Image (cartoon, rainbow, N blue to C red):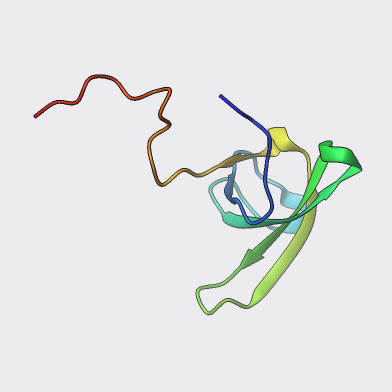
Length: 79
């Protein structure tokens, strides 16, 4: 599985970040790679698209959300 984040990937926090008042499960968008991929700027927005937090986070602090199955993980199709 490719763990490289891409611009505009939708991600979810896997840890609490209490110093910034955001918690595990909150959804954001990768808006910029930092330090050659050692960190990423992630923007958190409300339902109306207004940004309420933008943070530099390490890749182990969040996971990419997938809307389609990975072709490598697909098993035989069940009918």
